[in-house]
Amino acid sequence: EAEVAQSPRYKITEKSQAVAFWCDPISGHATLYWYRQILGQGPELLVQFQDESVVDDSQLPKDRFSAERLKGVDSTLKIQPAELGDSAMYLCASSPQRGIPYEQYFGPGTRLTVT
Amino acid sequence: AQSVAQPEDQVNVAEGNPLTVKCTYSVSGNPYLFWYVQYPNRGLQFLLKYITGDNLVKGSYGFEAEFNKSQTSFHLKKPSALVSDSALYFCAVRETLSNDYKLSFGAGTTVTVRA
Image (cartoon, rainbow over all chains, first blue to last red; front, side, top):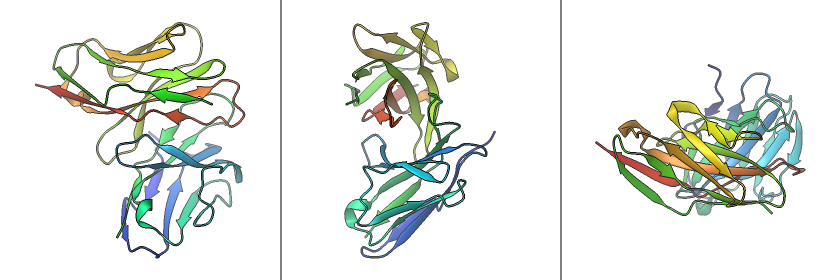
């Protein structure tokens, strides 16, 4: 069964350092999402791509976060500089098409700890 | 604006007993509704969804959910719980007419099934 791949699974970094996460969606899925999940809370959308275009980044802290999906396939989420409050699970999800209410398929996540 | 409430942080049941996880939603129009399950240090797994039609939706692992428009609820149920059902459960909603197709998640309910 096809899965969403994410790496690394765990990342520990010091505050003010740069960190990057990678996501490879299920083959053929046009829509890709990055979520942040703080412990004890539900996931919150950071950015949504349709192919290579950003369609929603209203919740992305753009002063320190950036995301790209250059060829419309895999994607990278970057934080620079990292802050203590960025410690969370970062989840990537994909779905076949934006408009139709397909379920989203989630990767295993990257757990970030900022010290 | 769309939102989801999961009124119970924790649900504890004995194995073999019925399991219910509550969810209420708020949208301007009609909802698409989803249930996901998350095991420790893992991403979210899709369980079931309500799009339209029959109010009783059947999903993976013997779970089902009932859409109740008058009560704006979408409670998750399983007739006979297993110890392996112990996990974190999330309800999510999306407005059918939403232009951004964003899912809003509840805060989650931790289910513990004791042997």
